Length: 117
Image (cartoon, rainbow, N blue to C red; front, side, top):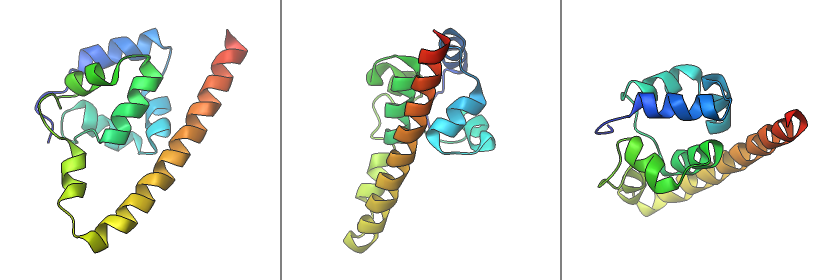
């Protein structure tokens, strides 16, 4: 579980980026409920989610990690590191697939933003 999720900071950055929470959920390939849990500090942000949020919000990854309550923690990466070698390969493949989906959604978002601006 995250130590402290700075909800107001994330809300301000979403407004500045003209993004809705549903856009963020889609970019992260999670449900809106999972995102709501993250916002309520009931779901920790993964390393790949930090990277995606940093891109979406145009903020440094370190700042997103800190505001997401992961400063000084190893985050979700530690969970993967504790898995057995047999479990790591499918987890890595799933992570790569998820990153591919995230990148595709980010490209869609960027294309839409270019159209608007």
